[in-house]
Amino acid sequence: MFIYKEFKFNSAHHLPNYNGKCEEVHGHTYKLRVTLEGDVQKDGMILDFKEIERIVAKGILEKLDHKDLNTVLDHPTAENIAVYIYKNLKEKFPKHVSLHKVKLWE
Image 1 (cartoon, rainbow, N blue to C red):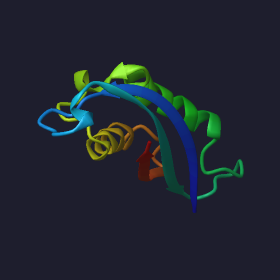
Image 2: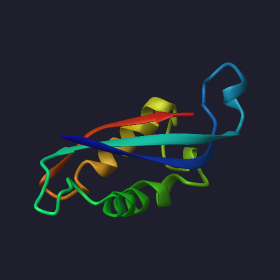
Image 3: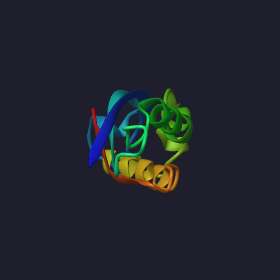
Image 4: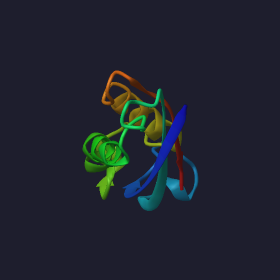
């Protein structure tokens, strides 16, 4: 079974070696969807949404929200940000839950 939770965060970045407007510092409101896979537990849930919020806030939002993403990643494209999020969340959930995918968009 799959469940997901969506989040928003605001960050600034610029794309080095890019020819266009994105080579200048600018900001985005990003939307993030975290999809989890697991079996329903005795409490009737895969994982409490409050726990998902806590894990994502501590593992991702505290690191990316209202930050200059160029201080976090060498080349902060949407794809690289999504990879960063996936790698940083993958091992944060309880063992009975697996991170299925992350979706990131502006």
